[in-house]
Structures are given as structure tokens and as C-alpha cells.
Image (tube, rainbow, N blue to C red; front, side, top):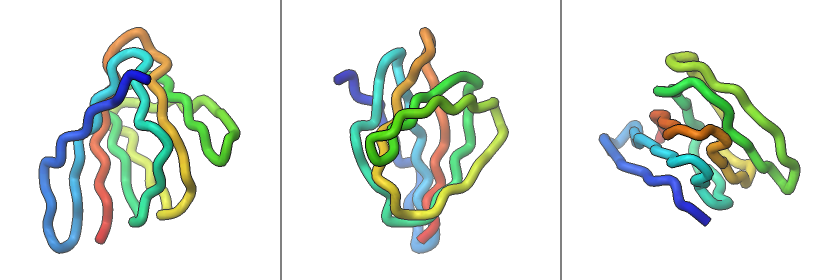
Length: 92
């Protein structure tokens, strides 16, 4: 498994801001979020999401943010032939 890389940019008493970078074919590995979070794509492209064993493709657009609640276990995989990046903002 080619691992996506995470770089924590900011960690305060209110938020954790992490930049995620995915080389082609890289993935996060199965994980769950303990906090609600917002994702801000820095690239447009397709990511594969595997949630509770069910796979789906999500097309993300540069700058078009989305929010998720804490909880579900998932894996994220870069389906593109280029690096995919996003900022993840976890709310404490």
C-alpha cells in the first residue's frame, strides 16, 4: 500500500489543520475520525472512498469544501494519475 502523507500545519485548542498529499494510487488506510471535520480540496479529481466495506467514487473540485461528522471508518484512495491534495480541518 502506497501511503498518503499528512502534515499537521496547525494544532490549537479549537482545531487541527492537516495537509494531505496523495501520490497516484496512495491511500490513507482504514481510519475513523474522532472529531467533526471539513475538507478543502486543493486539487480537482476523483477519490475512492471505502466506507464500511462499500466502495464509491467521489469527484472533488478545487476549493469546494465539504463537512463530515465524526464516526464512520473509511479509507481514501487517489484514483488519479497525478498528486491529489486537500486540507482537513478537525474541530475540537
